[in-house]
Image (cartoon, rainbow over all chains, first blue to last red; front, top):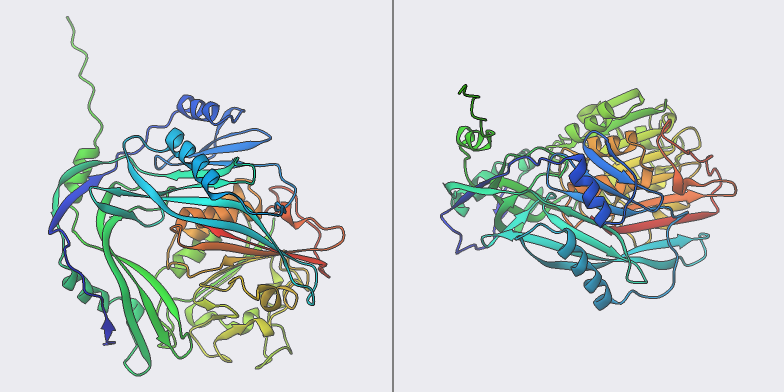
Length: 280
Length: 224
């Protein structure tokens, strides 16, 4: 078995609540109201995984499987090519206003990063490419009860253009409610499981080298298009694997940190029965 | 209806770490996009030479005109790095290198390289741009590492089927399936009389004529 180096990890909880995620109950009327607030016209159309409102200027997509939505300006004829930088303070202000208006009520979130979205244009092999910043992207992450939400399905992003306008934004989120607490597998046990991950099968010391540089506990959120009934405590491993063919592979791997009681979870998600009609 | 092919690698036989989700990721694309299916080669049947130009590079055993360059859209899922992507079986050397590749001179319009770092920004026009684009419209990929996940191929196909442009569909699929530390990227070409910015999947909207002799290349990247 390949030797893997792990970081020291301490202070993890021994038990945390499992969070059930009731499916959303989007209606065309609710989506139309969201679209009106986002200044998007047009009727709401059911496009399978999404409910979509669109006009010539913008679209609003609502994900039917989660409490997620995405706004996008449209109508450009090519990648924006405008000189200059975008003022970060102004971009953060616009982003804060958007998440205040469209972020989930009562959720804990903070700015995780601010990044320049960019376009490079090349007009020939011998000419240096031109670079244009198209947006400043303000990225937000969530946490619940002190644990981060990890994975692709819990985050917000607001893309702000040169005039401080919101050119695109999304909120990926699932409403949730706590169930009983689940015991968290100790980090040492998780590391032992990780050593047996299929990634390392057939790899041996001398021919490969692996180390984990980051190990943390969080709640894993699936993509916003996917049905998910529970936010399960999960270990996130980040590290580097080196082999002769592929000398630098930066991996991220998720392993469950608790065993869910699926029957209990299903029970909590059952709709409330209407009372029978009683003759009087 | 357009034609598609996929290749994916889970088993690297000790050449690199095995991957878990490349098969469902690529087959999600294959089984969801409204298209004529042409090939699905996985693990030991996925070969680097399927992507390489005959007579180019070393070894010069490419057969892309039979496979990757004989369909409209190809989705590859496996390991990659800035100038190459990797296979699990050494038919020639298990590596498709940028120096062995010319795409679009037969059929290929769009290719997704769902592999780490292939579209790393610095030097991208010299690696994958001017030498590779011979009618190809887009390479869709990542500037950074990307995760071993199962949903992105299906998501991309769903967005294409729903009528989003190729670039919009890729951005949305990447946003849906990665955290915001990962950067999506694409590289596209244009020439006189072409407009690849507004490309859609066949039957879903505008498709540009091929930029056989590109005059301008565009590279875009942003966080997912």
